Length: 188
Image 1: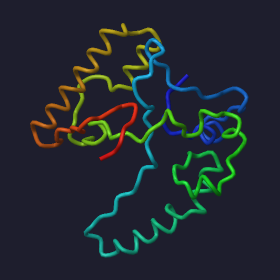
Image 2 (image 1 turned 30 degrees about the vertical axis):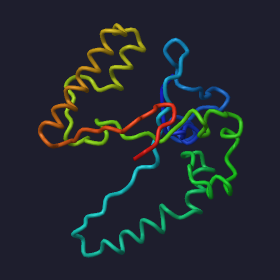
Image 3 (image 1 turned 135 degrees about the horizontal axis):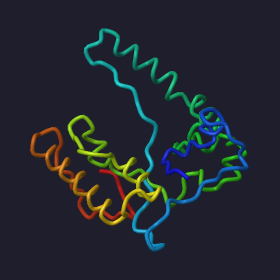
Image 4 (image 1 turned 120 degrees about the vertical axis):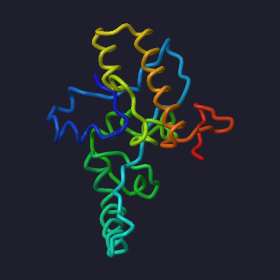
């Protein structure tokens, strides 16, 4: 079992870790006590950075748009199992593969949401978390190598300390979203 928020498992199991489709499936992320307190986090596709001082920045952006923002490319990406599109025009035209048709939790649903970036992502270069990151920490809990309560408290304390330090030293800023509701999040 692993937790993913990319909705790209068909591509992973076809290319990265070849596995028969009948041997894997997707389900919502488990909850504590069966109570859902927020939407499942997912992110859109990453992006490329263009150097603003480049003498060819306009040409580079045109190439980027022609390749990666091209609807035909995005349809092929979705149909190939490399990720799920959130663009209505792509969803309308794409013919997703069998895995997407047979494994309903692969598709973006009403339990998923584009959420605000967490501080450790938003301020990645300026937020230094001491010790194991959240992924390694969760792996330790999953394999029974760490006590759940004390390990999660320590993880929370370490991430909060790093966030507060980033705000203090100016490599991050305080993030407050008025009336934020994790069951009905909106990006601001």
